[in-house]
Length: 159
Image (cartoon, helix red, strand yellow):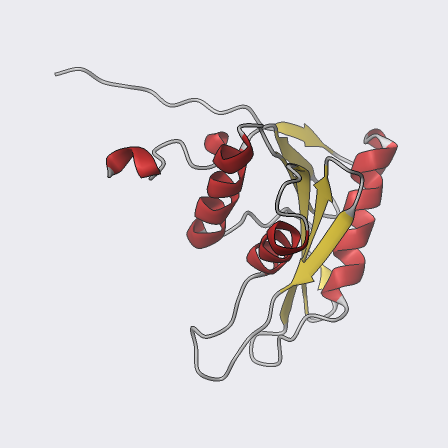
């Protein structure tokens, strides 16, 4: 019986000061996006900022709904808007920030499975890796491509 091992590369930083200006700006945009999240039920606000190859930054935040699961995550809000407004421009990177009861999380919060799938579709659509930046006050994680977040991916190759 063959055994396969899946390895991913995650680079961790202890402070935002260690990052380059582009990544810092993207994180700050995602932080600002948390301020207008609609999260009255969970008090868990998530902001996402997408950097496009043309330099545009598109933000999104989670939008909850009393009729769960009718809401939408920040990552999908940002990516769908970016793909709608700039359909031919590739996504370079995405920063994701979460806060609970108005306090930024100390450790990074990874995207849910549905968001990972949408991120993967976007990466595959443009045939370019998307850098994923997960922010926490005490730790920042950077993953250089979405396929590392979703190694057993579901793609159009199956049909």
